[in-house]
Length: 243
Image 1 (spheres, rainbow, N blue to C red):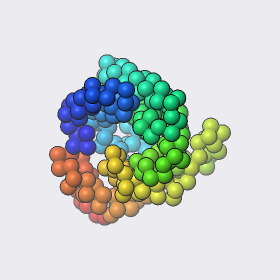
Image 2: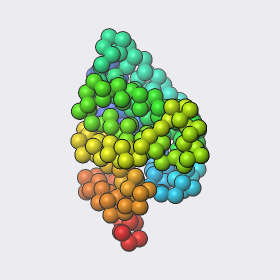
Image 3: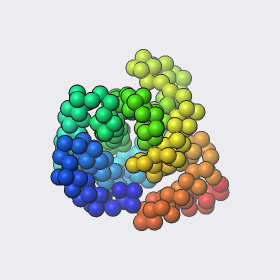
Image 4: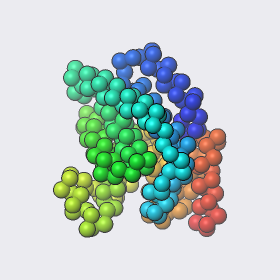
């Protein structure tokens, strides 16, 4: 996936589902793969690196695929069913909590970037954050889960004051410094989502106008995934603009 080879990633996830049909992680991973393949097709991945909100929330270049969305919803529902069944047996099941955090997070991304349903995206985000926090309560060393606490803290901590207070009425609040620290922890020690945490951290650095730190992370990602031209292009753009 990080190399933008979504067909190969999808086949691997499908093989995993066949081998472990009761494990929600396979379905959660395939959901994530389909969403990011759609982001790539709609030219939305480039917008992730825009510091200006107008460009960040740009309309997709093409219409979304309704059949793909239906498949995403089917997979996410399957993930939820399997994860909830495991949690009834063991409320501390790490695979189940992580799968639910991942699924809610990716559905929130789809709602925001493809459908521009921002309050719906916030609802998914809050649910994903709740599952991630439960996971961290049981295992503080499950470093991938810090992505959720990092993103939610940074986003809600960045809201302008007139929006921040109404958001708190819906339980949406955060602290920017805590968000950056959590993202850095996931980027340094994560397992499955370590590269994604690096990407999110680079975007955070861009929004904080720390171009050298953002470029360093993107250059590192480009070396790790040379077939993903997005990382190299963004690093080159930052260098060309004068860090």
